[in-house]
Amino acid sequence: MEIMRLVVTGTFGAGKSTFVRSVSEIEVVDTDRQVTDETGDIKEKTTVALDFGRLNFSSDMVLHLYGTPGQARFDFMWDLLIRRSHAYILLVDAHRPSDFRAARQLLAFMKARVQIPMLIGLTHMDCPGAWQEEDVAIALGYINHKDRPPMVSVNATQKSSVIQALLVLLQHLIYDSAVR
Image (cartoon, rainbow, N blue to C red; front, side, top):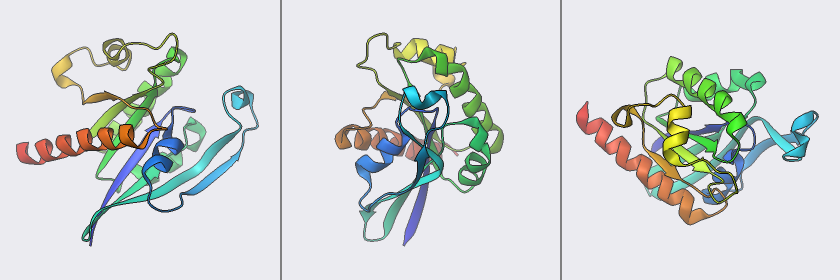
């Protein structure tokens, strides 16, 4: 059986755990703990190690999904998870521009360790004050459209939206392997 490993990363509260839960065919293994700092205004629990889910594509291919912690103090887990991954998705909360700098730093962290296909998933696009795709791309450092990875709007609470994001990433993987 072929196992494909996908890391789902992003800043605190971007929707990583929800993304993994939306498509996993098994009960998600999580390491959620009570929030103990000022981030408690956003949500009650946070991932401190990883979320693990699985999605079967066929009888001989399975996708393992690894959700990372969103806070930089857990960057040792980012490092452990990304090094054996085949691809990753960076989730960016489009209505919290105060998090864009941290998302850009997380992106730089991943790029410094691996050169693998990735996708940027914009969450919370339906919230008031959400930035448009092009503006988020610029905030993340992608000035030139042709140099940036695929970007999609994704509602992490909706399985169909998560599946659509995975399909876009799969297309990118196929294209990337054909170009190499």
